[in-house]
Image (spheres, rainbow, N blue to C red):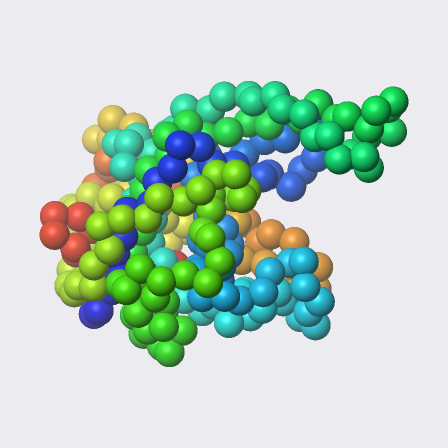
Length: 234
């Protein structure tokens, strides 16, 4: 199976958790599928949420069937987070005198992932061509336009299907896809992450994802090997 593989990192990232907090805005702990599709849409010049759409934003309508796999570079899948304070000085930001709003956001520090994309349809082929030739229409970023995405180590390669039994998985995976033997694990990272958009509301559809060094017992999806890494696409 042909795949696009690349390294994605940055100084900071902010993938906003939509539940609003009065005092702070929080981030998801890893990049999720909708954010990745948004970044791919920027690279390929597709429109986002700010433009009118009937069912989904253009980027999601065109790219929702793309299959991705995300491998956090830290072994345990965890990135440091820090609360950042900055001023939003546009006049409509706050009703207070001067229109100044102090924004408090939680940012990921030095995020770093290896991302794989299954090349299986015209859109994924187009994305692979853009990435391999270092082309983009709009600037890709990590959640906000002040968090620029550093994309490197782009390559087109092959992934070999393998049996999952008694093997480790190195990518994030929806919890309901893989059964692990948790008796021998040394760590388990888990978090609810967006995996798509709901058609009626365009709100996030979320699933619990996990990353662990436990061995797989069985898997409902195909497992692929890339070098020494085993991954699952979703």
